[in-house]
Length: 111
Length: 114
Image (cartoon, rainbow over all chains, first blue to last red; front, side, top):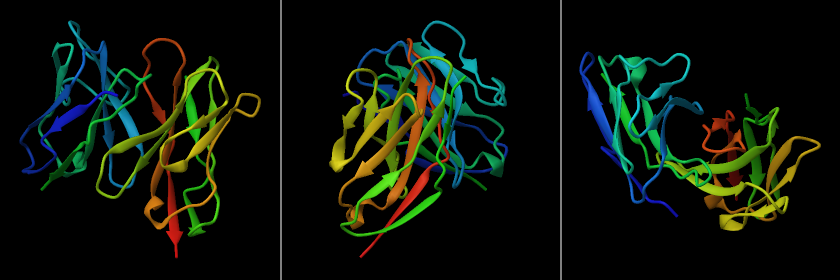
């Protein structure tokens, strides 16, 4: 089974600032996925990150707000830009879905 | 596109009783199906998954689920629950070809009482 590590595990940020979340997988994977879980809600896919190409964003999510990097087959970052309290959520990364393991998530609170 | 419906937002049950959490999906193509558990203030843990083969899938912590293609269902069951099973349970589906995104249901909160 894959091991997915996310950093930071939690953070409290001021509105208007940005936070970069890191996701490390212990094996090479073609695709990585970033999800958001708003308080009391289910998970929604933000984007799919494929190494060597731009991320593919889901409806309602844009690159300017959630820029993603995928520099190699084991690592990805998600930045939450110009944060507002509405961005307070848990952000989770996952790898190729037939294994479907998730990191422990980053709990973000924007004040 | 795929979608998932978890009809029960909350299921209360007494300890040692059996439980079934319902999940129905919609898809025009073959699917992969997953159940996850989320304990308070924790991430997602994979309980079990159906990719192909036997329609009865056994997972961790004594849970099992049965894939029913004709009824487009993937209900989760446990014959005897424990207090420690109190958590949020999410059903998820993806297209069963290649690497695809997961679409999640809205979740079912299982509340186990003594």
